[in-house]
Length: 217
Image (cartoon, rainbow, N blue to C red; front, side, top):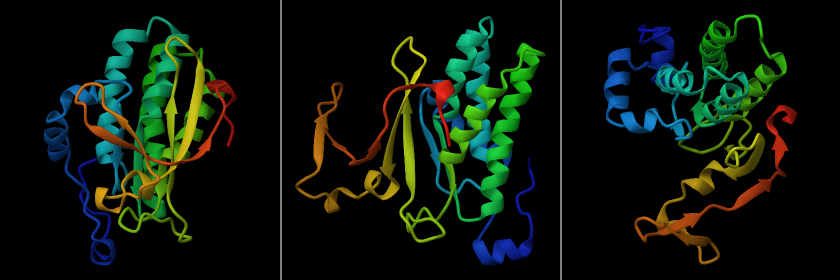
């Protein structure tokens, strides 16, 4: 998708201009190693219809196919890791819906090419649920949704060699609070590699481990 505007009124009202494919790739090439890590997380705070996120997904799916296409179970398990690592925010609801559908469509096309008629519909529903939680409508500057409530994101993780999924919810504002605003009751840890002190955001909700196929809306 190379069109950079949908309508001039949207540019005037919302400053909406989509990043061209060449710029997307040039910027992602700066962090090429991260785009090829299946579990590396990407957040686009003004995602539009998903130009950046779509390319991140394409790059991850290329690695996924190379590593796991011979086993549908492994491919699906690591697909959950890939999809759950991609996050987006946009102020316009139609962009959010288009972005979710675009990401799902990219995945579905590649999934069907590999496994053809052996399509796991329940698994695909799980991916849709994750995309609904990860790509949301709101304002990244105010860190609130259309109703004025704080934006909330889920952190997803899987234990090694396990099909169970761990979900924790965090306030977007809590994650990105500037250091000068940290309060004394915040929890910290130490980065094992750098020795630096790292803030741990407050967990809003901690869900029990479940098989990813049991994830519900």
